[in-house]
Image 1 (spheres, rainbow, N blue to C red):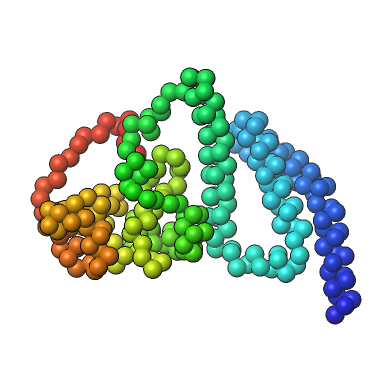
Image 2: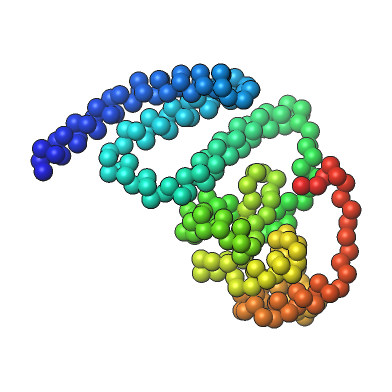
Length: 241
C-alpha cells in the first residue's frame, strides 16, 4: 500500500510539472486547428478559445486518477456546464465593451432595448447555475422540467439562456399545476404573465400565491380566463424574439 501511494504521489507530481508544457502544446494545437479547419474567427476570440481549451484540458489531465474517475458522475451534464461557462465569459467580455461605450457616450440601445423581457417584469428569476448552487436543483433536472413544460423558463435581455422564475418552486420542485397552466395559456410566457397578476377569476388574488395552496382552483380560473377573448398587440417584426 505504501509503495502504491508513493508511486501515485510521484506520478501526480510529474503531471503537475508537465502541465505548463502541455498547456502550451495544446494552445498551439487548438489555434492551428481553428486557423485551418475552423470557421472564420476574429483573432481575440481565437486566442481566447485556444487559451481556455489549453488551461481546462491541462488542468483536468493533471488531476489524480481518483479525481479523473469522478468525472464519470457528471458525464450527462458536461455540455450544460461548458455552455454556462462559455456564456458567462461572453457576458463578461461584452459587458466590459458596453461599459466602455457608455463611458464614451458612444453606446446606442440595441433592438433588445425595446423588448420587455424577464428581467423587467417577471419578478425574482435565476439561471440554472444559480438555482443549482443555492437551491440544489441539478441543471439537468431543470432542463428536463423545461422540456416537458413542467417548469416555466423565460428569455432575458442579459443572456442567451432562459431563466426560471423562483416563485414557481416549492420544496425543490415546480408547483403542481404548472404543466396544465402552460397548456391552457398556450406558452410559458403567457402562463407566467397571468400567474403573477391579480385575477378577477380568483377574486383579485394573485394566481401564483393561490397555486401554492393547490392547483385545482387556479386551473379552473385559468380556463375561465382563456374563454374570454384576450387583447392582442401587434409587435413589429424587428422587435419579436
